Each structure stands twice: as C-alpha cells, then as structure tokens.
Amino acid sequence: MKYPLRRTLTGAFALVFVVSLPVTAQSLVSSSLPDSPGYAQQAGTSTTETTGVIEGEVTDSHGALVPGASVTLSEKGHAALHDTTTDSAGHFTFKALGPGSYSVLVAAPSFKTYFSPDIELHPGEHSEMPAIALAIATADTSVDVSADSTAVAEQELKRETQQRIIGIVPNFYTSFVYDAAPLDAKQKFKLNAHSVFDPTIFLGVAITAGLEQERNTFPSWGNSDAASYGKRFAAGYGDALLTHTFGYALYPAIFHQDPRYFYLGPTNKMSTRIRHALLNGVLTRGDNGHQEINFSHLLGSASAGALSSVYHPASDSAGYLAGVNLGVGIGGSALEAIFREFVWPHFTTHVPSYANGKTSQPASTKP
Image 1 (cartoon, rainbow, N blue to C red):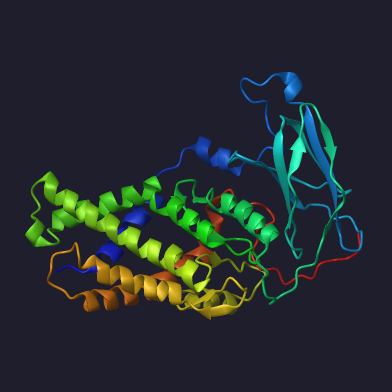
Image 2 (image 1 turned 180 degrees about the vertical axis):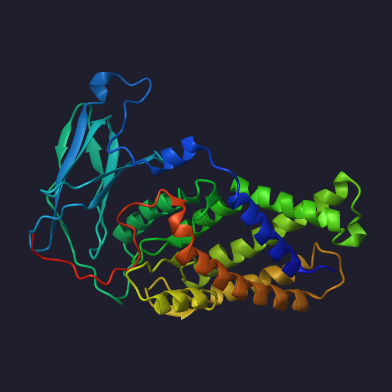
C-alpha cells in the first residue's frame, strides 16, 4: 500500500502549484488597498437610515492619547468588518451607518486588545463612546478566559478567516497577533470548518488524486475509469478531513490548546524565530497562555493515520500508518511553520496593520 507519506508530499507539491497560479493586476491592486473606514450605503436602505455615526477616543491607562491604533467596527449578524485608525488626537469615526447592534475592537502594539459592549444605533443617531483606555500588555502572563476575551477572539477569528496567500490559498491558522485571545471550543471547530470546506482544499485533493491515478497508486483500485479516481479523491479528502479535525479542533478542545501558529515577526532575533518555528510540531500554546507539549497535534496525526486504514486498501496496519502519519505530521508542521514565519507573511492579504507579531518595544505612557 502507498501510505499517507506519499499523499502528504504530493499534496504539498499540489499546494505549491496552487500558490503559484497567476494573479491578475486587478486582484493585486485590490488586495493592497486599505479597508473602508465605514459602511457604504446598503442597497435598499434609505439615505435617512444610513446617517448614523459612531466615534470615540483612545488613550492609554495614564490618559495619554494613542494615535495610529487600529479600530475595527462589526455589526451583529454581518460578517463584514470595517477598519480605521485613530488620528493624531487618538480619535476615530465611523460614518454612514445604518441602524443595528455594533461593537468596536481596538488594538495597538504593546497594549491589550479592547472589545466594547454592544452599541445599539438607531436611525440617524450619533453615538459618542466613552474614552477607551487601553491597558499595557504584559509578557508571559496567564490568560483569563472571560466573556470579553471570547468576544475579542471572535473578532480575531473573523480576521484570520480572511487571510489568504496571494488572495487565494488560506492562511487561516497563522495569528499575526502574538498575544491573541484564546479560542473557545466552538471557535476551534468553526475555524476548522472554514479550512476543511474551503474550495482550495478540494482543488489540492483533486490534483493529488489525479497524480495518483496516473502513477497507479493503490493498484487494487485500478486507474482507468472515473470510479478509481473517485476512490482516490475520497480517500485523499478523508485523510485531510481526519487529520485536520482531530489535530486542529477535537483534541485542541479536549486538551485546551490553541491550534494556531503565533507569528513572532522581524523585531525578534533570527535564531529565536527559527527555533520557534521548528518546535511548532511538538510545542504549542495552551488556552492558559503557557507553552505546552502539543498533544493535540501529535495525537491528531496518529489518530488520523490509524483511522485511514479503514478506507485504504488493507496492506499496512493501523499502527504502522499511525506512526508514519505522526512522523510526517511533526516534520510537516516544522516545515510549514518556517513558511508561516518567513515567507507567507509577505504574500498574505487582509492582515491588519497592528498585527505584526511579538514586539519587544515597550509601550510609551506619554504622548
């Protein structure tokens, strides 16, 4: 039997192929443009209903103004996010808003992310928020999972599911916010669903199945008709679905571990960044903020490998496949993390300006 190692390596080449697809000038220009600072008038909504305004001021805990902070506005029931930054006076404004329930997320380097309570905006209303005082982020502290941190994580999750390499290939599992709020169990499964049902996954599996059909991988399935190709496609997608769901959703929910890669960024030493990436397959961040052995990924790879014996031709044992998948998973995660740390950040779209990894620069408490 051709075990999952070949499928994994072939799939990697398929991913590189997808990443290398040509991008039109229009898509490149569009992805480089900043997001709109407010909602445009929605179709079917009268002008009098889209004159609402939400504005506010951002300071630090000492009352000093914080210019350049990223402010994200979201509306309950809508997936779209809208951004602006605070001006030199720490002020921000969102205009042309329709009635609805809104929330504001404020983020700035070296500060803890702030998430507002719901803001109920009536038609044409001008809402001025109380001054937002950002707390200074402290390094290596435990994370308290609260209603506020869950709401912050939800907003960050929306951001991450918009991240794509050259606007095509998902980069959902890279958190460019190093001190991101932990995901709860529901959010981990939601992120997994975004990944395993993304069209690029099916494209990668289709390419891999086609290559296996040509090479006659799993000879007992044949290689001359649609049925044999369908078996390879179904097995390939089954491998991806099991590996991802076990390692990135189910076990992370059970062990309270975060399935994402946390980008360090260029303000850190090269040796530190390389070590951080290479250890990604065996170490991860717990929901409590501490570094832990990555039981989620290790068990996820082994479990998926063992279960793949159910639908693959019966020539290798479940234990053998579990071991192979585990070894490939550890090495693959390390290689993938190197790309996440050093390559993909240069090509990933929809990364907000404040999300630049771990900064070693202390926060200023004076304007």
